[in-house]
Structure formats: structure tokens, C-alpha cells
Image (cartoon, rainbow, N blue to C red; front, side, top):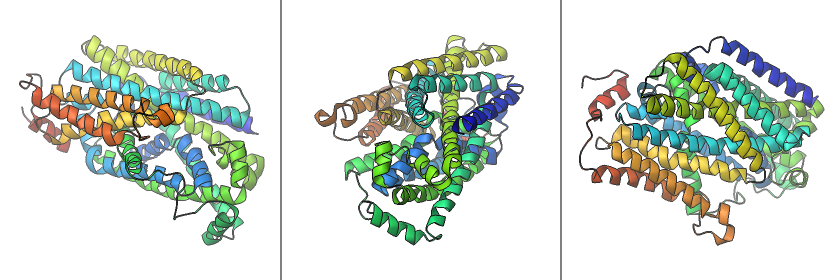
Length: 499
């Protein structure tokens, strides 16, 4: 049953890719679907991009084993999207074309700036892709029984095929289908859990208290107090808001108004999903038991499938497993399109070809870049089987918060920012975040030189400081810098002001 539904999911995604491939005939269609995605479609695609397998299965397991602590981790995602909705959604759509570097080029016409942002995007994307592929290999091998390396190669090959043939059009519709399937699965499981307790949430909470060691609300287990809590929250809020594969979704819609609408749609849907997920986690704790969940997987990643098997037998178990597989495919597809854009559009076309590559050449460069990035991610993931995937995902989120957020915020709101400030800020944020993670407890354990698991409490200010120092220490503004007022008018209205 599980294999059959897995094959059905693969067949559906391949059909979407074949349909999209007939429409993927230009660089614009490949990178941003020609900017023709509607607000509702893009909102659902954003949900599909953000709700990864680790978010669904991982948070369900954390809630089942540790209570409301797991819910704290998803709350940051909602705050991040509120931040994006209020501050950056419309300006990014008005300033950008294909990549984050395009946004910066609206003011800084420097190859060094574009190169720095492209490298930063590639670092974030590769870290996040490895985390997703390692997690995919482990999860699929547990659910289906295939070898780890087989699962990694299958997922990697599929994601390369989706992007090479269908580009952003295929990615968008795979994410939409995945979001609908996942939301429907969450809804069905919540209804079945509540049905076990007479549709009385209080009875569910009482059962959790009686049958597990969870203290539902008062003492969320495992959360470190003080600065570590603040650093975790800061990483979740700023890092999620600055992930490249999330930000480029604003370029797939016709205008800034639709970008804002898509964020509203995503925010409401994610809010409802995050409110529903704790019922699944608590249901697993009450109906399966913490001991059984921990025996199957110490991190609790199989709590959701175990609960599905209890509630609906082999059929629901197979559906949940297949939805988790579709979730992985959707997320890694978004990562590949972001990484290939940085490599092909930013570095190849703009830096090496000096913007002289024709549209067809750009399209094929994007396709080759997608294959290359996918192959690299597969090789690295095969060698990282025993690596802590939480550490890899942490690295991506922290780099995004520390390097992208300072540059984008100061681009929009600090007129003095210059080319030197952008480059210094990106380098400072990227370097400090990677170094602090490497000397932190996630890598060095008790011998850690830096005490906090998430270094954003320090690395984000370092990113802002790098932007400031690089700006004030530069002797003069460069002649290739567009005046702030010109950029600001374009960011707010979408229309370029006269220079």
C-alpha cells in the first residue's frame, strides 16, 4: 500500500512537470514562472515551501515527547511571516526580478555585491538541501524500508528533473498540491484524534496528563532559559524571513499588491495549520504513548505515522508517509530553483557574461546549474548520513538571519549604506554565524567555546555592525551607486523615479 501511494505521488509530480515543461521556454518562466502566479496560488506555494517534513513530523514528535516546547519552534515562523508581510514583501517585489541579488542591484550596480549575495545564497541553499536530503533518506528508509542511499538518490534525481524540465512553474504547482494534501491530512488526523475523545479537547488534554510525563503548559520540557531562548526565537523569526527560497516567491506574482495578498493567504493557512498540529502531537502522546514513540525513533519523527496507523490502519499510514515524501520533494525543489538562480543568473550571466547572455542561453544555464547543484547536494548528503541534520538546518537559518537581514533592512531604510557596507555586512554575517555554530554546543558539546545553540543573538548584530563599519570607513560613494531616493521610490511604488 505504502509503495503504491508513493508511486502515485511520483507519477502526479512527473505529470505536473511534463505539463509545466511545455510552458518553461524562457529564463523568466524558468526562474519566476513569468510572474503570473496568483495571490492564492502563491500563498499555497509558500505554505508548501515552508511546511517541510521536519516541521510536520518533527514538531509533532517534539510535542508528543516534550509538550508545548515543540510549539514554540513553529510560532517563530508565524512571526517571521508577519515581519515579511509588513516590511519587505512589497519592496522586494518592486525591486527584484529573479534573485535577491537583483534587489540589491536596484541600488548597487556592483559585480562584487552580486557575487557576495550569490555565494551567500548558495551557502544557505546547500546547507538546507543537505539537511533536507539527509532527513529524507533517513525518513523514507524508515517508512518504506529502502536503503538510505537509494532514498537520497531518488529524491535528488527527482528534484533535478522537476527544475530542469519544469522550472518554477513545476515547483509552484508541486508545492501547491503538496500543501493541499498536507493540510487535508492534518485536518483528517485532527478530526480522528478528537473523535477518540468524544470531540472534547479537554478530555484529550486530561488523557495526555494521565498517560504521559508532559506538563502541557506550565513547564515546557527541554527549553533552555534566558539568552538561549531569545537566540532561538531570533533565529526562527529572522532566519525564516530571510531564506532565499522563501523570498524569491515574491518574484513569481504580477505586482506588489499580489505579493502582499499571497503573504496574507500564507499567514492565515499557516496559522490554522500550526494551531492544529499540537492536537496531533498530544493525540500521539495519549494514544500511542511516549515510550512507544521513543522506541520507534528517539527524536519522535515517527509519532505522526504511528498515530496514523493507530487511527486509520495501513491506508492512513501510507497516506501520511506519501504526504511526507511529497513534502520533501516540494521543499527541495524550491531550494534548487533558488540555488540555480544564484549560480546561473547572478554569477554566470551577470558576472561572467556581463549580462550579455541571450534568453535561451540563460535558460540552459539555469537548467545545467540545477543539475549541478542537485548532484553536489546528493554527493554531500551521501557522505553526511550520520551528521546531525538539525545542525545543518541551523547553519542555514542562522546564516540567512545574520547575512541577509542586515543588508536588506539597511538597503530599504538607511540612505547612507554603500557598496562597501553591503559586502562587509554579508561577509561579517556569514563568517560569524558559521564560526559561532562550529564552536558552539551543537558541534563541540560540553567543550563549546560559545555557550548558545543558536548564535543569532551575536551574529545578527555583527552583520549590522559590518554594514555600518564598511559604510562609514569607505572614502566616498561609488559612481555606480543609484541614489537612495531613486531606489526608495521604486521600492514603495514600483515605478522608477528620475535620476
